[in-house]
Image 1 (cartoon, rainbow, N blue to C red):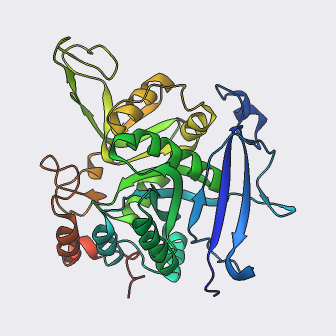
Image 2 (image 1 turned 60 degrees about the vertical axis):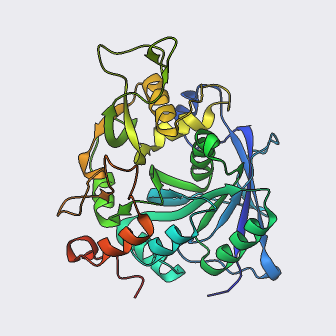
Length: 337
């Protein structure tokens, strides 16, 4: 297997081609066209069998009619589920713990995981003006090659924008039935997530998560919660907890078609997505196995709900959970041996 890395520079115009004209007609603002150019380091042209590669995605206003690799049409990589693990520049220790537990730490592991579960996993991160941090990130990319790099500033206040950029990038690169947003401070069970996504559904627009109805932030002058500007009875609108949720392909296709300023951005990323899902009239699928406080025979994602939005001490707790047989006893977790 070649040691060079392959980087995709995807440009985000306002339109993207669709194989299905019927689906394209359903787009709210038209069809988004995307062009991807490929830069191979050291002019080595090798590729990885299961596409476990880091990709860098930059969005601008240029327009092209197809995904391309030189003169050849570049097909999106087909998977059942694409899992984007949201991470940041201060989360080096978290990524280290993940790679020692449920996240494969090398290409063979990523390939075996994808073959056994249908899931492709990548860490998702933006950029920073701190050159030293960017140099360190580059070293990590070269060592592990398991990132999706977004051309957006990595700031907590811009998480809704990062999330939208993630879904657009993932959709451009992967032909997936579901796109999963996950945080880097949860213990995920990939085999069980795969079973959840493989379930037969009759609604093509599906939003899967551990759902909640509750306040997020309040305007003290108005005495109401802002996300939609109104209350539903004595409760607030339904949305998924932020550490992990999944959107079906049709839902993400609609997000991709929207102009970046089409929908309102709220302070909280999970509230933002939840509000958009109401506007799209999706099917909410509430699954409490995505927010379990401990590993059980059926838990999919484990984190310290409601004490923390994730594991309270993720670097340490991740390793502790993995020492428990009920957590780590999975046919998909042999890749780090």
